[in-house]
Amino acid sequence: MSEGSGSPELVLDTSVAVKFHVPEERHEEARTLQRGFEDGAVSLLAPGTVLPEVFNAFWQKHRRGELTSDEVRAGWELISELPLALYSPEDLIGRAVDISFETGVIIYDALFLALAEDAETVVITDDGKLLKAVKDTPHARLAHPLAQVVSLISDNN
Image (cartoon, rainbow, N blue to C red; front, side, top):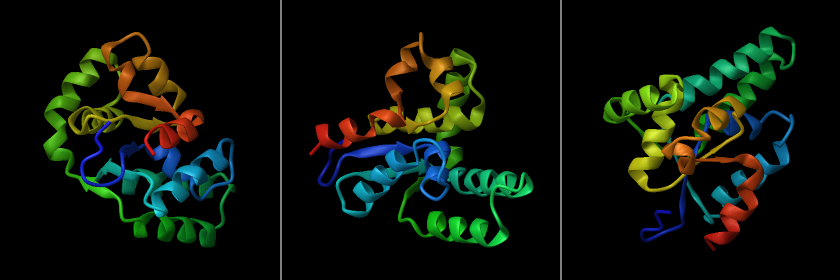
């Protein structure tokens, strides 16, 4: 993984970013990643699409009655204030298109994989469909389940 001059880098998937705020399954693992990020143990990268994707996830939870409007606003504030290294989707789209064709994942997910490939790191995700889609492809090395976050952080410190 890319270690450069600072902390190791991981690509933050939307499914994990949502869990920073929403107490659902694997919330504690997401909070471990968030604390590692806040403590400087790891740097987080994401395509710029992560912000509207996270808000959309919060909005959908609000529509289903799972979050109040105040909880949506608090979650949005949390995510939008994180000093994530955001990358332009336009810079990733060419490779993301290829990854979509090679794996069958939707272009939004392929952007995260393209960024991980470019940054020589991995996407940390809790998206079972994404993990399943890349499982038997050369791109499987790019996506790691959220359940492995503790080992990913500790292996790089």
